[in-house]
Amino acid sequence: QVHLVESGGGLVQAGDALRLSCVASGLTFSSTGMGWFRQAPGKEREFVAAISYSGRTTYYADSVKGRFTISRDDAKNTMYLQMNSLKPEDTAVYYCAGRSNVIGTIYLADYNYWGQGTQVTVSS
Image (cartoon, rainbow, N blue to C red):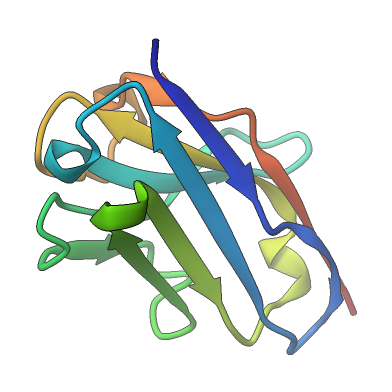
């Protein structure tokens, strides 16, 4: 059974940084495309960042490009999202996602596995 567990969320001020972690189990993590998505209150879940199995290919939403960095440590079965220069509009529940393919994509429907989410709140 696949489990994805996010951690690292919290309440911060605008301009601060946070690092989210996602620990995976029950799958061959090194062969799994991974992504981060987020959902703000009253809005649909949206793509944030994705990373392919090697870590060499990454994708970012325009809204986070230059501020967020996605990475992975296959030895620890863990994916990260370093979030710098946080803005109030980054406030959302952040979800870790994995798919049965080596390539991470920007499309929510491509992902088979989801974590429970971690809340990030950025105050102005």
